[in-house]
Length: 398
Image (cartoon, rainbow, N blue to C red; front, side):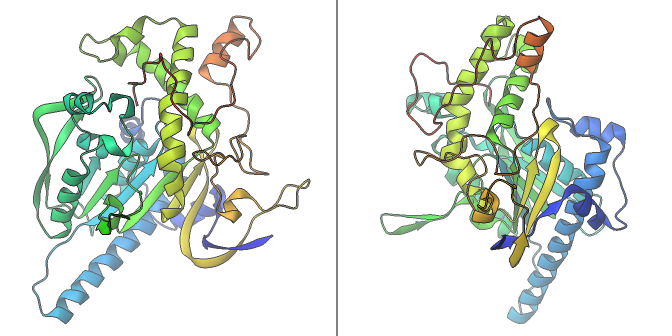
């Protein structure tokens, strides 16, 4: 069934062909350094997904630079170097930080824009003391927990031609802003801004237009996956952090280091349900269709489809044999189902595009111990946009 869409949809093999003659400039060692704590990134993924994407972005950067030069010529003003701003959004644990790092590494190897800076919005979280004073520690990662004015001021300065800026620094060990430590950015060609809520739409408050981070982006990217997979990736990451970062004496989450497997899985799923899943449904997922490119992931963090915007184009998507309904993506509906309190699909996928079964860390451990899948930590149906439950430490590793 055909439906109008501003996106074109490419399966992985077709997308990989758009690499053309773009050289692979990263080694196995480079990829290992870029890989996140729970990612399966390898050279094949870089070659088939990120090289074509870097080519597309490089073309857009060049076009943007040429437009600025033409505008300066028309206005009779001296040319001012203005960096290209790329936003990268997505859920906790979906792999957006790895995506941002890989793109930064590839883009800086293109000759026309060798200086690429990476900013994470974690650096603009309010300090814990401020969040505690405002009663927002339970809402860390939600839009209200960020110093939006400071981030907008930084992006405004960059877009005004300021070549020397600094950002605060956030520690995932202490779970707080590091006092008196800054990240310096000098004369960048491209700035990648990565964060949960960077694609939020501008709004009007009391009749006054409010500027948002997304207003400054030249392009944007959303890393997407069915929620049931993202939740499982979060649980797997929690297990790895329990064995590593949580063990350090200065970790904010040292109490989690002593949890046994059952308690660790129960804690991680509880945190997902009350914090990260709720934030995804309420604030992150609704911004998906604002992105210029959507990376659609399946099992093992593998990108299976790429959806770049390219004007209003008729796209043809195969429908499952048993249904005459269009897919969620064709309708523009959220891929993860329920958004806020509105109801909807909770099966974690689009009709005809359900994820392949994945064995997660908890299920794998139970199977190795001779237990049946589902004996512990059964997946309860829940509404992530609902009210929070008491008695839960929601200040989780995000």
